[in-house]
Amino acid sequence: MPQEIFFAQNIKCNGCVARVREGLLGISGIESVAVDIPTGRVTVTAVATTRPVIHAKLAELGYPEKSS
Image 1 (tube, rainbow, N blue to C red):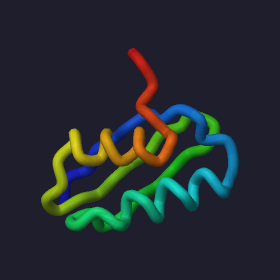
Image 2: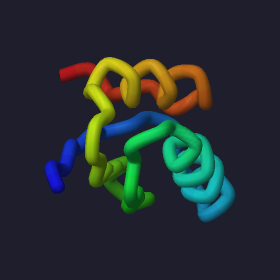
Image 3: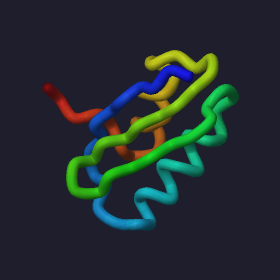
């Protein structure tokens, strides 16, 4: 299964991790979500979800992607 990597802002604690995981796992096609607090790295394993959908959900949850 393909993996997508995102770097999200505002991830500061395990509560943030839980919110991101629950929010993304609610999207059809997402199999797993791993979050690293220090870096904000969000690794998503998905069957059929597009990057823009995940990007929008992260922003909706209050964890938008970091600017390059």
